Image (spheres, rainbow, N blue to C red):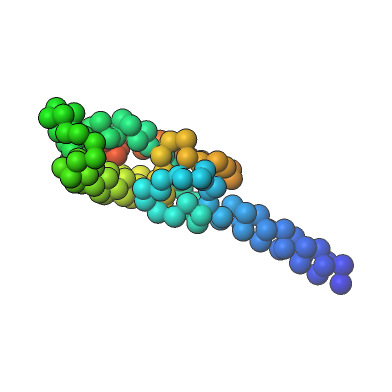
Length: 128
């Protein structure tokens, strides 16, 4: 009887550890999740959004042509840029075995998970 109780206690403790580890990451308010689900991920990653943004053709066009914020053209270019970044984040995450990508600084608590920086991989994937 005592062995069974000890085994059940050990099993319950293991299930608790698995449940805590499997809960993903905790993000800050207004965090931007570019790929995956922060609440259920097990392999999170971050990107330096400013660096990635500056590498997009849309942002470069906004800067070189002086497209004004608030104009319809600006909004279209920003929309295209965001879609391009999300596609690149997905591609880079899948190539690197990651199941969630958020902006650097948006993770409040990684809950013991190793977070990888994918800025370079996402920047490299922007053209595809």
